[in-house]
Amino acid sequence: MKGSDGSSSLVQDGGLSTETTGSVDGASRLLRLADLSQELGADPVAEEARELAARVAEGRFYVACVGQFKRGKSTLLNALVGYDVVPTGFVPVTAVPTVIRFGEKLHARIRMHDGSWRDIPIPELKEYVTEELNPENKKGVDGAEVFVPSSLLSSGMCFVDTPGLGSVWTGNTATTRAFIPHIDAALIVIGADPPIAGEELVLVEAVGKQVQDLILVINKADRTSDPERAAAAKFTREILEKRLHRPMGEVFEVSASEQIENKGPLRDWAKLLASLYHLVEDSGRNLVRSACDRGLQRLSEQLLAVVSEDRDALQRPIEESERRIELMKQTIGEAERSMRELGFLFMAEQQRISDLFGERHRQFFHIAWAESKKEFDETLPSVPRGFGPPYRRRVMRLAQEISRRKVMPWLKPEQEEGERQYRVVGARFVEMGNTFLKKLADAGLSELTRMPHALDPEKGFRVRSRFTFEGFITLASPPSPLRWLADVFLSLVGARKMITNEAREFLNHLLETNTSRVQNDILNRIEDSRGRLEAEIRKLLHEISRIAEQALDRARRVKEEGTPAVQSALARLDRLEQEISVLTELRSTS
Image 1 (cartoon, rainbow, N blue to C red):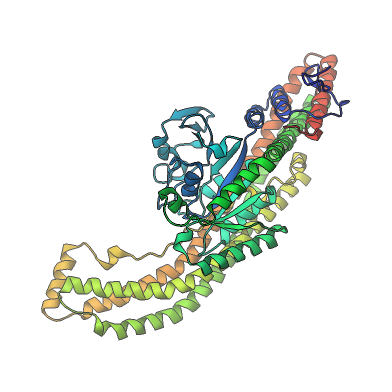
Image 2: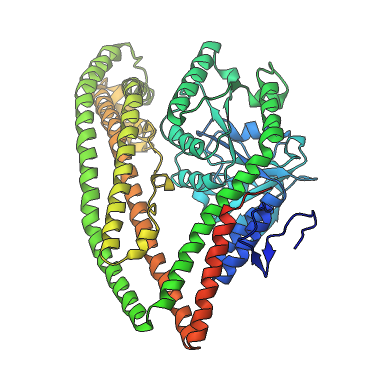
Protein backbone atom coordinates (compact mmCIF):
# COMPACT_ATOMS: atom_id res chain seq x y z
CA MET A 1 0.00 0.00 0.00
CA LYS A 2 1.39 3.41 -1.00
CA GLY A 3 1.30 6.53 1.13
CA SER A 4 0.54 9.99 -0.20
CA ASP A 5 4.26 10.63 -0.72
CA GLY A 6 4.71 7.44 -2.70
CA SER A 7 6.55 5.60 0.07
CA SER A 8 5.53 2.22 1.46
CA SER A 9 2.90 2.58 4.13
CA LEU A 10 3.30 0.82 7.47
CA VAL A 11 -0.40 0.76 8.17
CA GLN A 12 -1.80 -2.68 7.58
CA ASP A 13 -5.12 -3.92 8.97
CA GLY A 14 -5.10 -1.19 11.60
CA GLY A 15 -1.53 -1.87 12.67
CA LEU A 16 2.10 -1.64 11.55
CA SER A 17 3.75 -4.13 9.23
CA THR A 18 6.82 -5.79 10.70
CA GLU A 19 8.00 -6.58 7.17
CA THR A 20 8.38 -2.91 6.27
CA THR A 21 11.86 -1.50 6.76
CA GLY A 22 11.08 2.10 5.89
CA SER A 23 10.68 5.00 8.29
CA VAL A 24 7.43 6.34 9.65
CA ASP A 25 6.16 9.66 10.90
CA GLY A 26 6.74 9.91 14.66
CA ALA A 27 3.36 11.46 15.37
CA SER A 28 1.63 8.58 13.61
CA ARG A 29 3.58 6.08 15.69
CA LEU A 30 2.54 7.85 18.88
CA LEU A 31 -1.09 8.00 17.83
CA ARG A 32 -0.97 4.30 17.04
CA LEU A 33 0.58 3.67 20.45
CA ALA A 34 -2.29 5.65 21.98
CA ASP A 35 -4.80 3.39 20.20
CA LEU A 36 -2.97 0.31 21.46
CA SER A 37 -2.95 1.75 24.96
CA GLN A 38 -6.70 2.19 24.91
CA GLU A 39 -7.13 -1.32 23.55
CA LEU A 40 -5.13 -2.56 26.53
CA GLY A 41 -7.05 -0.38 28.98
CA ALA A 42 -4.05 1.84 29.75
CA ASP A 43 -5.79 5.19 29.42
CA PRO A 44 -3.07 7.35 31.11
CA VAL A 45 -0.51 6.04 28.61
CA ALA A 46 -2.92 6.78 25.76
CA GLU A 47 -3.42 10.36 26.94
CA GLU A 48 0.30 11.05 27.24
CA ALA A 49 0.96 9.49 23.83
CA ARG A 50 -1.64 11.74 22.17
CA GLU A 51 -0.22 14.86 23.82
CA LEU A 52 3.28 13.99 22.65
CA ALA A 53 1.95 13.20 19.17
CA ALA A 54 0.47 16.70 18.92
CA ARG A 55 3.79 18.23 19.97
CA VAL A 56 5.72 16.11 17.45
CA ALA A 57 3.27 16.86 14.62
CA GLU A 58 3.61 20.60 15.24
CA GLY A 59 7.40 20.36 15.44
CA ARG A 60 7.55 21.72 18.99
CA PHE A 61 10.56 21.07 21.21
CA TYR A 62 11.07 22.14 24.82
CA VAL A 63 13.99 24.27 26.00
CA ALA A 64 13.77 24.24 29.80
CA CYS A 65 15.09 27.20 31.75
CA VAL A 66 16.80 25.58 34.74
CA GLY A 67 18.53 27.13 37.72
CA GLN A 68 18.42 28.06 41.35
CA PHE A 69 15.90 30.39 42.95
CA LYS A 70 16.83 34.08 42.45
CA ARG A 71 18.77 33.47 39.22
CA GLY A 72 16.23 35.58 37.31
CA LYS A 73 14.98 32.78 35.04
CA SER A 74 11.49 34.22 34.55
CA THR A 75 12.88 37.69 33.82
CA LEU A 76 15.28 36.19 31.28
CA LEU A 77 12.46 34.38 29.46
CA ASN A 78 10.37 37.55 29.33
CA ALA A 79 13.34 39.38 27.82
CA LEU A 80 13.93 36.65 25.24
CA VAL A 81 10.34 36.53 23.95
CA GLY A 82 9.89 40.30 24.17
CA TYR A 83 6.74 40.20 26.32
CA ASP A 84 6.16 40.49 30.06
CA VAL A 85 4.18 37.26 30.34
CA VAL A 86 5.84 35.19 33.07
CA PRO A 87 5.43 36.47 36.66
CA THR A 88 8.63 37.66 38.32
CA GLY A 89 9.46 38.73 41.85
CA PHE A 90 11.85 38.68 44.77
CA VAL A 91 10.32 35.57 46.33
CA PRO A 92 10.33 32.06 44.82
CA VAL A 93 7.94 32.57 41.92
CA THR A 94 7.35 29.50 39.77
CA ALA A 95 5.26 26.76 41.39
CA VAL A 96 4.57 24.63 38.29
CA PRO A 97 6.28 24.28 34.89
CA THR A 98 5.08 26.99 32.51
CA VAL A 99 5.46 26.43 28.75
CA ILE A 100 5.89 29.54 26.59
CA ARG A 101 5.05 28.73 22.97
CA PHE A 102 4.23 30.55 19.75
CA GLY A 103 0.76 31.94 19.19
CA GLU A 104 -0.74 34.54 16.88
CA LYS A 105 -1.99 36.47 19.89
CA LEU A 106 -1.19 36.67 23.60
CA HIS A 107 -3.19 34.31 25.77
CA ALA A 108 -2.70 31.66 28.46
CA ARG A 109 -4.26 28.48 29.74
CA ILE A 110 -3.72 26.16 32.70
CA ARG A 111 -4.11 22.43 33.05
CA MET A 112 -5.62 21.01 36.23
CA HIS A 113 -4.90 17.66 37.87
CA ASP A 114 -8.03 16.18 36.28
CA GLY A 115 -6.59 16.81 32.80
CA SER A 116 -8.91 19.69 31.88
CA TRP A 117 -7.64 22.93 30.33
CA ARG A 118 -8.85 26.36 31.40
CA ASP A 119 -8.26 29.57 29.44
CA ILE A 120 -7.22 32.51 31.60
CA PRO A 121 -6.14 36.12 31.03
CA ILE A 122 -2.35 36.47 31.21
CA PRO A 123 -2.53 38.85 34.23
CA GLU A 124 -4.23 36.03 36.18
CA LEU A 125 -1.40 33.57 35.45
CA LYS A 126 0.35 34.49 38.69
CA GLU A 127 -2.61 33.17 40.69
CA TYR A 128 -1.82 29.65 39.49
CA VAL A 129 1.94 29.48 38.85
CA THR A 130 3.46 31.56 41.65
CA GLU A 131 4.50 30.38 45.08
CA GLU A 132 2.88 33.37 46.75
CA LEU A 133 -0.63 32.73 45.39
CA ASN A 134 -0.33 28.96 44.86
CA PRO A 135 2.11 27.74 47.53
CA GLU A 136 3.36 24.20 46.90
CA ASN A 137 0.73 24.02 44.12
CA LYS A 138 -2.23 23.74 46.50
CA LYS A 139 -4.62 24.56 43.63
CA GLY A 140 -3.73 21.36 41.80
CA VAL A 141 -2.29 22.81 38.60
CA ASP A 142 -0.36 20.37 36.41
CA GLY A 143 1.07 23.06 34.17
CA ALA A 144 0.49 26.26 32.25
CA GLU A 145 0.94 27.38 28.65
CA VAL A 146 1.47 30.95 27.47
CA PHE A 147 1.08 31.77 23.76
CA VAL A 148 3.28 34.60 22.49
CA PRO A 149 3.70 36.08 18.96
CA SER A 150 7.50 35.92 19.22
CA SER A 151 9.64 35.31 16.13
CA LEU A 152 12.08 33.33 18.28
CA LEU A 153 9.35 30.76 18.96
CA SER A 154 7.74 30.74 15.51
CA SER A 155 9.73 27.70 14.31
CA GLY A 156 8.74 25.30 17.09
CA MET A 157 10.96 26.17 20.03
CA CYS A 158 9.09 26.41 23.34
CA PHE A 159 10.58 27.74 26.57
CA VAL A 160 9.73 26.07 29.86
CA ASP A 161 9.96 28.08 33.06
CA THR A 162 10.71 25.46 35.72
CA PRO A 163 10.30 25.85 39.49
CA GLY A 164 13.53 27.11 41.00
CA LEU A 165 15.64 25.35 43.58
CA GLY A 166 16.62 26.63 47.01
CA SER A 167 13.34 28.27 48.00
CA VAL A 168 11.55 27.53 51.24
CA TRP A 169 8.94 25.29 49.60
CA THR A 170 9.67 21.59 49.35
CA GLY A 171 7.42 20.42 46.53
CA ASN A 172 9.15 22.09 43.61
CA THR A 173 12.31 20.06 43.17
CA ALA A 174 10.23 16.94 42.54
CA THR A 175 8.01 18.96 40.17
CA THR A 176 11.02 20.05 38.14
CA ARG A 177 12.48 16.53 38.13
CA ALA A 178 9.18 15.07 36.97
CA PHE A 179 9.41 17.31 33.90
CA ILE A 180 12.92 16.11 32.98
CA PRO A 181 11.75 13.33 30.60
CA HIS A 182 9.97 16.01 28.52
CA ILE A 183 13.00 18.30 28.19
CA ASP A 184 14.74 18.43 24.78
CA ALA A 185 17.36 21.13 25.48
CA ALA A 186 18.16 23.36 28.42
CA LEU A 187 18.99 26.95 29.18
CA ILE A 188 21.11 26.74 32.35
CA VAL A 189 20.93 30.03 34.26
CA ILE A 190 23.70 30.48 36.80
CA GLY A 191 25.12 33.29 38.91
CA ALA A 192 28.51 34.35 40.18
CA ASP A 193 27.97 33.86 43.93
CA PRO A 194 27.80 30.90 44.03
CA PRO A 195 28.06 29.90 40.35
CA ILE A 196 26.58 26.39 40.68
CA ALA A 197 26.42 24.01 43.63
CA GLY A 198 24.38 21.57 45.68
CA GLU A 199 20.93 20.61 44.42
CA GLU A 200 21.31 22.92 41.43
CA LEU A 201 24.30 20.92 40.20
CA VAL A 202 22.49 17.62 40.80
CA LEU A 203 19.51 18.77 38.72
CA VAL A 204 21.65 20.21 35.91
CA GLU A 205 23.60 16.95 35.84
CA ALA A 206 20.35 14.97 35.57
CA VAL A 207 19.17 17.20 32.70
CA GLY A 208 22.58 17.03 31.01
CA LYS A 209 22.52 13.24 31.03
CA GLN A 210 19.25 13.30 29.08
CA VAL A 211 19.85 16.12 26.59
CA GLN A 212 22.87 17.08 24.55
CA ASP A 213 22.17 20.77 23.99
CA LEU A 214 22.93 22.92 27.04
CA ILE A 215 23.19 26.70 26.79
CA LEU A 216 24.95 28.28 29.77
CA VAL A 217 23.99 31.80 30.84
CA ILE A 218 25.23 34.04 33.65
CA ASN A 219 22.32 36.37 34.33
CA LYS A 220 22.40 39.58 36.40
CA ALA A 221 25.81 40.41 34.92
CA ASP A 222 25.25 44.04 35.93
CA ARG A 223 25.49 43.06 39.62
CA THR A 224 28.89 41.39 39.51
CA SER A 225 32.42 42.35 38.53
CA ASP A 226 34.26 41.10 35.46
CA PRO A 227 36.64 38.91 37.54
CA GLU A 228 33.68 37.36 39.44
CA ARG A 229 31.87 36.45 36.22
CA ALA A 230 35.03 35.08 34.62
CA ALA A 231 35.70 32.89 37.65
CA ALA A 232 32.09 31.70 37.74
CA ALA A 233 32.10 30.85 34.02
CA LYS A 234 35.38 28.94 34.33
CA PHE A 235 34.22 27.03 37.41
CA THR A 236 30.83 26.12 35.90
CA ARG A 237 32.28 24.96 32.62
CA GLU A 238 34.95 22.84 34.33
CA ILE A 239 32.63 21.15 36.83
CA LEU A 240 29.97 20.36 34.19
CA GLU A 241 32.58 19.00 31.77
CA LYS A 242 33.85 16.77 34.57
CA ARG A 243 30.37 15.56 35.54
CA LEU A 244 28.95 15.13 32.03
CA HIS A 245 32.17 13.97 30.33
CA ARG A 246 31.80 16.27 27.37
CA PRO A 247 32.91 19.81 26.43
CA MET A 248 30.68 22.75 27.31
CA GLY A 249 30.22 25.73 25.03
CA GLU A 250 30.57 29.42 25.72
CA VAL A 251 29.03 30.89 28.87
CA PHE A 252 26.95 33.94 27.87
CA GLU A 253 26.97 36.94 30.24
CA VAL A 254 23.74 38.95 30.14
CA SER A 255 21.46 41.11 32.22
CA ALA A 256 17.81 40.35 31.47
CA SER A 257 16.60 43.30 33.54
CA GLU A 258 18.82 45.71 31.59
CA GLN A 259 17.54 44.24 28.33
CA ILE A 260 13.91 44.70 29.38
CA GLU A 261 14.55 48.26 30.53
CA ASN A 262 16.58 48.95 27.36
CA LYS A 263 19.58 50.30 29.26
CA GLY A 264 23.16 49.30 29.91
CA PRO A 265 25.53 47.38 27.61
CA LEU A 266 24.22 44.52 25.47
CA ARG A 267 27.01 42.25 26.74
CA ASP A 268 26.45 38.76 25.19
CA TRP A 269 22.78 39.26 24.41
CA ALA A 270 23.20 39.06 20.63
CA LYS A 271 25.35 35.92 21.02
CA LEU A 272 22.70 34.28 23.22
CA LEU A 273 19.96 34.99 20.67
CA ALA A 274 22.17 33.71 17.86
CA SER A 275 22.79 30.51 19.83
CA LEU A 276 19.04 29.96 20.28
CA TYR A 277 18.29 30.62 16.59
CA HIS A 278 21.13 28.25 15.72
CA LEU A 279 19.53 25.61 17.97
CA VAL A 280 16.26 25.98 16.05
CA GLU A 281 17.84 25.83 12.62
CA ASP A 282 20.41 23.08 13.18
CA SER A 283 18.92 20.92 15.92
CA GLY A 284 15.18 21.58 16.02
CA ARG A 285 14.12 18.59 13.91
CA ASN A 286 16.53 16.27 15.68
CA LEU A 287 15.27 17.43 19.07
CA VAL A 288 11.68 16.73 18.08
CA ARG A 289 12.68 13.32 16.74
CA SER A 290 14.56 12.50 19.95
CA ALA A 291 11.59 13.58 22.06
CA CYS A 292 9.39 11.28 20.03
CA ASP A 293 11.72 8.30 20.35
CA ARG A 294 12.23 8.81 24.10
CA GLY A 295 8.50 9.02 24.63
CA LEU A 296 7.85 5.91 22.56
CA GLN A 297 10.44 3.96 24.51
CA ARG A 298 9.10 5.04 27.90
CA LEU A 299 5.43 4.48 27.07
CA SER A 300 6.04 1.21 25.23
CA GLU A 301 7.77 -0.29 28.26
CA GLN A 302 4.66 0.42 30.33
CA LEU A 303 2.43 -1.24 27.74
CA LEU A 304 4.64 -4.31 27.38
CA ALA A 305 4.35 -4.88 31.13
CA VAL A 306 0.55 -4.87 30.78
CA VAL A 307 0.74 -7.30 27.84
CA SER A 308 2.94 -9.70 29.84
CA GLU A 309 0.56 -9.66 32.78
CA ASP A 310 -2.48 -10.26 30.56
CA ARG A 311 -0.77 -13.16 28.78
CA ASP A 312 0.26 -14.82 32.04
CA ALA A 313 -3.30 -14.53 33.35
CA LEU A 314 -4.69 -16.20 30.22
CA GLN A 315 -2.19 -19.05 30.22
CA ARG A 316 -2.57 -20.14 33.83
CA PRO A 317 -5.74 -21.62 35.38
CA ILE A 318 -8.10 -19.11 36.95
CA GLU A 319 -7.78 -20.87 40.30
CA GLU A 320 -4.00 -20.54 40.13
CA SER A 321 -4.28 -16.86 39.29
CA GLU A 322 -6.69 -16.36 42.17
CA ARG A 323 -4.33 -18.15 44.55
CA ARG A 324 -1.45 -16.15 43.14
CA ILE A 325 -3.24 -12.85 43.70
CA GLU A 326 -4.24 -13.94 47.18
CA LEU A 327 -0.62 -14.83 47.84
CA MET A 328 0.42 -11.53 46.33
CA LYS A 329 -1.88 -9.67 48.70
CA GLN A 330 -0.50 -11.63 51.62
CA THR A 331 3.04 -10.88 50.49
CA ILE A 332 2.21 -7.21 50.13
CA GLY A 333 0.58 -7.27 53.56
CA GLU A 334 3.71 -8.88 54.98
CA ALA A 335 5.74 -6.31 53.08
CA GLU A 336 3.87 -3.57 54.92
CA ARG A 337 4.92 -5.17 58.20
CA SER A 338 8.44 -5.66 56.87
CA MET A 339 8.57 -1.96 56.07
CA ARG A 340 9.14 -1.50 59.79
CA GLU A 341 12.41 -3.39 59.43
CA LEU A 342 13.33 -1.18 56.52
CA GLY A 343 12.38 1.76 58.71
CA PHE A 344 14.92 0.63 61.32
CA LEU A 345 17.63 0.76 58.66
CA PHE A 346 16.49 4.23 57.68
CA MET A 347 16.52 5.27 61.35
CA ALA A 348 20.09 4.02 61.74
CA GLU A 349 21.16 6.27 58.86
CA GLN A 350 19.30 9.19 60.41
CA GLN A 351 20.98 8.59 63.76
CA ARG A 352 24.39 8.51 62.11
CA ILE A 353 23.76 11.88 60.50
CA SER A 354 22.35 13.27 63.74
CA ASP A 355 25.45 12.20 65.69
CA LEU A 356 27.78 13.55 63.03
CA PHE A 357 26.25 17.01 62.85
CA GLY A 358 25.50 17.11 66.55
CA GLU A 359 29.21 16.76 67.28
CA ARG A 360 30.12 19.35 64.61
CA HIS A 361 27.60 21.72 66.17
CA ARG A 362 28.93 21.20 69.69
CA GLN A 363 32.52 21.83 68.62
CA PHE A 364 31.64 25.04 66.81
CA PHE A 365 29.27 26.36 69.46
CA HIS A 366 31.84 25.88 72.26
CA ILE A 367 34.31 28.15 70.50
CA ALA A 368 31.77 30.56 68.98
CA TRP A 369 30.01 31.24 72.28
CA ALA A 370 33.26 32.08 74.09
CA GLU A 371 34.38 34.41 71.28
CA SER A 372 30.95 36.02 70.87
CA LYS A 373 30.52 36.65 74.60
CA LYS A 374 33.96 38.24 74.75
CA GLU A 375 33.20 40.48 71.76
CA PHE A 376 29.83 41.43 73.24
CA ASP A 377 31.36 42.41 76.61
CA GLU A 378 34.13 44.40 74.91
CA THR A 379 31.71 46.26 72.63
CA LEU A 380 28.99 46.88 75.22
CA PRO A 381 30.59 49.98 76.82
CA SER A 382 30.48 51.75 73.44
CA VAL A 383 26.72 51.27 73.11
CA PRO A 384 24.92 54.54 73.93
CA ARG A 385 22.82 54.04 77.04
CA GLY A 386 20.03 56.59 76.91
CA PHE A 387 16.36 55.74 77.46
CA GLY A 388 15.50 52.13 78.51
CA PRO A 389 13.59 50.74 75.49
CA PRO A 390 16.01 52.21 72.90
CA TYR A 391 18.93 50.84 74.92
CA ARG A 392 17.36 47.38 74.84
CA ARG A 393 16.98 47.60 71.06
CA ARG A 394 20.62 48.63 70.65
CA VAL A 395 22.09 45.83 72.77
CA MET A 396 19.80 43.23 71.26
CA ARG A 397 20.82 44.41 67.79
CA LEU A 398 24.46 44.09 68.87
CA ALA A 399 23.77 40.47 69.88
CA GLN A 400 22.19 39.80 66.49
CA GLU A 401 25.10 41.34 64.57
CA ILE A 402 27.71 39.38 66.52
CA SER A 403 25.87 36.06 66.18
CA ARG A 404 25.32 36.60 62.46
CA ARG A 405 29.02 37.32 61.91
CA LYS A 406 29.91 34.13 63.73
CA VAL A 407 27.31 31.84 62.16
CA MET A 408 27.28 32.85 58.51
CA PRO A 409 30.95 32.09 57.62
CA TRP A 410 30.56 28.69 59.29
CA LEU A 411 27.25 28.05 57.59
CA LYS A 412 28.45 27.75 53.98
CA PRO A 413 30.93 24.86 54.45
CA GLU A 414 28.54 23.26 56.94
CA GLN A 415 25.72 23.33 54.42
CA GLU A 416 28.01 21.93 51.72
CA GLU A 417 28.93 19.03 54.01
CA GLY A 418 25.28 18.61 54.87
CA GLU A 419 24.39 18.47 51.17
CA ARG A 420 27.11 15.89 50.57
CA GLN A 421 25.93 13.72 53.44
CA TYR A 422 22.32 14.13 52.32
CA ARG A 423 23.17 12.84 48.83
CA VAL A 424 24.92 9.85 50.38
CA VAL A 425 21.91 9.08 52.56
CA GLY A 426 19.48 9.57 49.66
CA ALA A 427 21.39 7.06 47.51
CA ARG A 428 21.60 4.69 50.47
CA PHE A 429 17.85 4.91 51.03
CA VAL A 430 17.13 4.06 47.39
CA GLU A 431 19.64 1.19 47.53
CA MET A 432 17.94 -0.23 50.63
CA GLY A 433 14.53 0.24 49.01
CA ASN A 434 15.58 -1.68 45.90
CA THR A 435 17.14 -4.43 48.05
CA PHE A 436 13.83 -4.67 49.87
CA LEU A 437 11.93 -5.00 46.57
CA LYS A 438 14.35 -7.66 45.34
CA LYS A 439 13.65 -9.72 48.45
CA LEU A 440 9.93 -9.39 47.73
CA ALA A 441 10.51 -10.51 44.13
CA ASP A 442 12.44 -13.56 45.36
CA ALA A 443 9.62 -14.27 47.83
CA GLY A 444 6.94 -14.47 45.15
CA LEU A 445 6.33 -11.00 43.67
CA SER A 446 8.00 -11.87 40.38
CA GLU A 447 6.32 -8.86 38.74
CA LEU A 448 8.92 -6.66 40.41
CA THR A 449 11.60 -8.15 38.17
CA ARG A 450 9.93 -6.33 35.27
CA MET A 451 10.74 -3.05 36.99
CA PRO A 452 14.48 -3.25 37.72
CA HIS A 453 14.71 0.51 38.18
CA ALA A 454 11.44 1.04 39.98
CA LEU A 455 13.17 3.17 42.60
CA ASP A 456 15.59 5.42 40.78
CA PRO A 457 17.77 7.98 42.58
CA GLU A 458 16.67 10.52 39.97
CA LYS A 459 12.93 10.08 40.67
CA GLY A 460 12.76 13.10 42.95
CA PHE A 461 13.01 11.83 46.52
CA ARG A 462 15.33 14.72 47.31
CA VAL A 463 14.09 17.67 49.35
CA ARG A 464 15.69 21.09 49.30
CA SER A 465 17.27 22.83 52.24
CA ARG A 466 15.03 25.10 54.28
CA PHE A 467 17.73 26.73 56.41
CA THR A 468 17.53 30.48 56.99
CA PHE A 469 19.26 32.59 59.63
CA GLU A 470 16.67 33.47 62.25
CA GLY A 471 17.07 36.88 63.87
CA PHE A 472 14.25 36.37 66.41
CA ILE A 473 13.26 40.02 66.19
CA THR A 474 10.23 39.48 68.41
CA LEU A 475 12.52 38.36 71.20
CA ALA A 476 14.79 41.33 70.62
CA SER A 477 11.94 43.84 70.74
CA PRO A 478 9.13 42.29 72.82
CA PRO A 479 5.76 44.00 72.34
CA SER A 480 4.74 43.55 75.96
CA PRO A 481 3.69 46.90 77.53
CA LEU A 482 4.81 45.61 80.93
CA ARG A 483 8.31 44.93 79.59
CA TRP A 484 8.40 48.41 78.03
CA LEU A 485 7.44 49.99 81.37
CA ALA A 486 10.02 47.85 83.16
CA ASP A 487 12.72 49.05 80.78
CA VAL A 488 11.68 52.65 81.44
CA PHE A 489 11.79 52.10 85.21
CA LEU A 490 15.14 50.29 85.08
CA SER A 491 16.68 53.12 83.11
CA LEU A 492 15.43 55.66 85.61
CA VAL A 493 17.07 53.87 88.54
CA GLY A 494 20.20 53.16 86.51
CA ALA A 495 19.81 49.38 86.72
CA ARG A 496 20.64 48.27 83.15
CA LYS A 497 22.31 45.08 84.26
CA MET A 498 19.14 43.06 83.71
CA ILE A 499 18.90 44.25 80.09
CA THR A 500 22.53 43.39 79.33
CA ASN A 501 22.17 39.96 80.98
CA GLU A 502 19.09 39.29 78.85
CA ALA A 503 21.06 40.42 75.80
CA ARG A 504 23.80 37.89 76.60
CA GLU A 505 21.15 35.20 76.96
CA PHE A 506 19.69 36.33 73.64
CA LEU A 507 23.14 36.06 72.03
CA ASN A 508 23.49 32.53 73.37
CA HIS A 509 20.01 31.69 72.08
CA LEU A 510 20.83 33.02 68.60
CA LEU A 511 24.05 31.04 68.36
CA GLU A 512 22.57 27.83 69.75
CA THR A 513 19.42 27.93 67.63
CA ASN A 514 20.98 28.96 64.33
CA THR A 515 23.87 26.53 64.55
CA SER A 516 21.42 23.73 65.41
CA ARG A 517 19.29 24.61 62.42
CA VAL A 518 21.71 22.98 59.95
CA GLN A 519 21.48 19.68 61.81
CA ASN A 520 17.71 19.95 62.17
CA ASP A 521 17.30 20.95 58.53
CA ILE A 522 19.22 17.92 57.26
CA LEU A 523 17.36 15.56 59.56
CA ASN A 524 14.01 17.00 58.43
CA ARG A 525 15.01 16.60 54.79
CA ILE A 526 16.08 13.00 55.39
CA GLU A 527 12.79 12.31 57.15
CA ASP A 528 10.85 13.82 54.23
CA SER A 529 12.84 11.78 51.70
CA ARG A 530 12.29 8.64 53.72
CA GLY A 531 8.55 9.29 53.77
CA ARG A 532 8.46 9.81 50.01
CA LEU A 533 10.48 6.66 49.38
CA GLU A 534 8.26 4.53 51.60
CA ALA A 535 5.18 6.00 49.89
CA GLU A 536 6.67 5.18 46.48
CA ILE A 537 7.28 1.56 47.54
CA ARG A 538 3.68 1.23 48.75
CA LYS A 539 2.41 2.83 45.54
CA LEU A 540 4.48 0.41 43.46
CA LEU A 541 3.20 -2.63 45.35
CA HIS A 542 -0.39 -1.40 45.02
CA GLU A 543 0.06 -0.84 41.28
CA ILE A 544 1.39 -4.37 40.79
CA SER A 545 -1.62 -5.78 42.61
CA ARG A 546 -4.03 -3.60 40.62
CA ILE A 547 -2.56 -4.65 37.25
CA ALA A 548 -2.69 -8.32 38.24
CA GLU A 549 -6.32 -8.09 39.38
CA GLN A 550 -7.37 -6.32 36.19
CA ALA A 551 -5.57 -8.96 34.11
CA LEU A 552 -7.38 -11.70 36.04
CA ASP A 553 -10.76 -10.04 35.48
CA ARG A 554 -10.11 -9.85 31.74
CA ALA A 555 -8.84 -13.43 31.65
CA ARG A 556 -11.92 -14.68 33.53
CA ARG A 557 -14.27 -13.04 31.00
CA VAL A 558 -12.35 -14.45 28.04
CA LYS A 559 -12.13 -17.97 29.47
CA GLU A 560 -15.88 -18.02 30.03
CA GLU A 561 -16.22 -17.82 26.22
CA GLY A 562 -14.14 -20.96 25.72
CA THR A 563 -10.80 -22.11 24.35
CA PRO A 564 -11.13 -20.43 20.93
CA ALA A 565 -11.62 -17.07 22.66
CA VAL A 566 -8.50 -17.67 24.78
CA GLN A 567 -6.46 -18.55 21.70
CA SER A 568 -7.77 -15.47 19.94
CA ALA A 569 -6.90 -13.26 22.94
CA LEU A 570 -3.38 -14.71 23.13
CA ALA A 571 -2.91 -14.15 19.40
CA ARG A 572 -4.13 -10.59 19.90
CA LEU A 573 -1.60 -10.02 22.70
CA ASP A 574 1.17 -11.45 20.54
CA ARG A 575 0.16 -9.05 17.77
CA LEU A 576 0.03 -6.12 20.15
CA GLU A 577 3.41 -6.98 21.66
CA GLN A 578 4.94 -7.30 18.23
CA GLU A 579 3.46 -4.04 17.04
CA ILE A 580 4.56 -2.17 20.17
CA SER A 581 8.10 -3.48 19.68
CA VAL A 582 8.07 -2.39 16.02
CA LEU A 583 6.90 1.08 17.04
CA THR A 584 9.96 1.56 19.23
CA GLU A 585 12.39 0.15 16.66
CA LEU A 586 11.35 2.18 13.62
CA ARG A 587 13.17 5.40 12.81
CA SER A 588 11.23 8.64 13.08
CA THR A 589 11.03 11.07 10.19
CA SER A 590 9.57 13.94 12.24
